[in-house]
Image 1 (cartoon, rainbow, N blue to C red):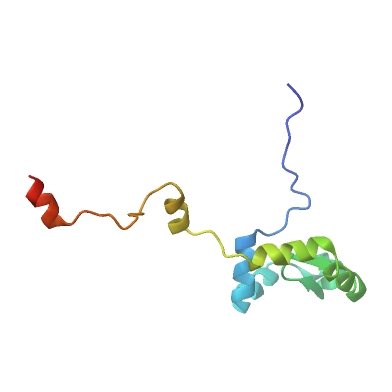
Image 2: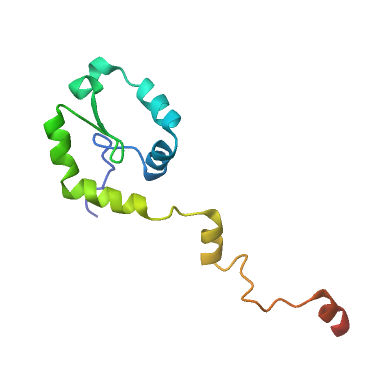
Length: 111
């Protein structure tokens, strides 16, 4: 058996659901930024990519990031509709009737 693959948390960013909340609600984003100390952030926290949840040293670095493949991939994934509980239940066959649900009167006639 080979070495175990471990999740690296050094470069772990915010999840898609958290970023989607940031985009929908400026208050949610402001609360997240309030938890970070500006002196500890790159560029004193002035340059932030909301979609990727990354801080940058300078405006130049941020502009080059927005032209890159990783940023564009993240934008494409954020444009897709988020998964819902209803969709998950439909995938396993729960809550779908396919239009052929017997009526109560039909059930009573059979008995």
